[in-house]
Picture (cartoon, rainbow, N blue to C red):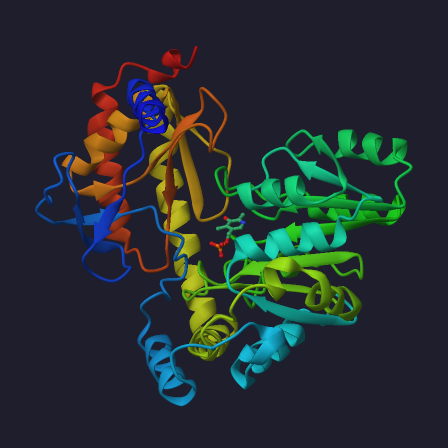
Length: 414
Ligand SMILES: *Cc1c(COP(=O)(O)O)cnc(C)c1O
């Protein structure tokens, strides 16, 4: 019977140290958060204050007073719900203004660009890959793409080829061998579990050479990279009509949702055919209203200051962590972004490191397969502009104490 099967599966997960549980935040998103949990017996654990390094609130905007005020103002002005999907009656002036502003942001990097606002990045990715990836198309997917891109590729009618992580030559060979009339290269901009940046200049050159298109999911670069926070395209100075850019608005932008920026004919095609756009209720207009304030902060002086603070924290963490990791047999990933993975190897080792940190009052999530490849379980440390120098120092001190006790845990990986 189903429940027996599920109970066996749960026991197996437990045995492999793969059980996932949720915590309960008792306070708003911030580096220091009061966190509770429901225990195995159903009772609630006493909430504790923990210093966290796991959120994607890279600029510390999720609880920014100006954005919270804008959210409240948006709700007073536009109500709580949109009432319908965008093509029925749910498309409002706040959504429209947000799209207009985002189109302006990408006018340089994508000539002829328009923008389309989605409820989530997951839905935006499904939309792009299914609406463009018809039966005659081929998707060339980077090996470490986010789950939502993988699911989009599964759902698309297109044929799918995968190229190894960062392997421009392998992609070149696949594109050269392909006779598909529509070639779509699909990649994360910043890899969500590794923190490295895709070689987009090279990928774009390949796209131009092989008459392909380049779809970039910049969930972790939007707001963070580039002089004005416009993301990885700005940072790398790329410009082409062949770009389809997806940015998410629940991470650095601090609110919720996502957008696609692409040539207006592509956006129009999505409006008319993308099922995750058409068959879902439009996001609350207050979200779009709040996002206009968020965009202004990101693009302005305050955003620039926050990006500078974030870069500072990244440098402090890496300077302290690199020698420690070498001694403990951990591997600090080669990342220049806010995502700083510490690869430990085995699932149990990653969990025990995470548990050890929590005893010291610090919260860093252990990321295990299938989110990352077998044998590369890791602490995914993320930094935010809201962290202080002392916060990073506290993390380094706690990790240092655990490193001193660690038998090189990478050996478990085998
Ligand atoms: C978080 C994430 C998404 C999904 O965005 P949501 O708005 O959270 O649904 C898509 N792609 C990547 C790379 C992500 O990290």
